[in-house]
Image 1 (cartoon, rainbow, N blue to C red):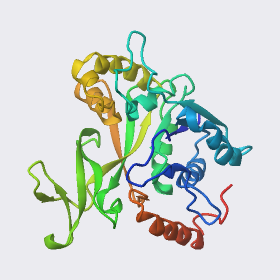
Image 2: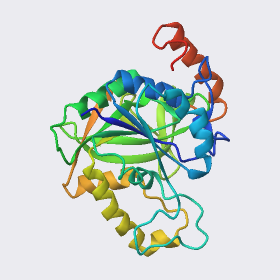
Image 3: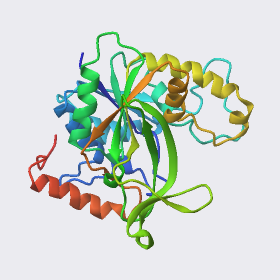
Length: 306
């Protein structure tokens, strides 16, 4: 069974200032997610599913889905603040969505095969899709609890316009993920010999290896992951501090870490030569347009994707 690509498209880009998932950056107005979908199809993915907010469904269907008609099977699901397990309700004053793993949970009724989760506003590159596509397509039928993530080399994921937040990964001798440590500020520091550094808890800049794997939210799961997520989301909502904190979020790394720590699942860290880029900041847009055009000029992508 061909794997499914599951795109998280329910969020707004606060630092970028707009709905960057629908921003045309390619020579014919292609979005970053168009390139992801093109690469995924090349890598053997057989279906595309998005999770979006209901309030921009019409715009999404017109601007995005229409172009894929006849190309690949597509489906939408929706993330809403009140999509909660029975017995739970939205705390008064809460307006922020419940996070990336809550968004993933929205696909439980439509995804029944191995799937890859990605962000819509990150350019992952062909090799990354080849790596995760190969992993998912080679899983034995009915496989459970054997997951993967693509570990991008840190040096391939930086922005020239400011610091970036990355999950720095530690893995064991089997290349199984041990821990993801969130570093909210990573950048090259001129006063440190242009080395990659992260800001630690004391506000000091510490060096980081060029090729240390970092998470760009590119995960490979099998459908049993939804059951794990449903059970843990109930635990998450049952914790008073998560209900009192109106910005508490149910993130993918939180779920993955629990499964790893209790020995339920393994997550293989897949290396990739792909170079990430995206529009973390509005100033990244021009460089992203130029990089995409360069890839088109080099023949990596056709001038018009779909």
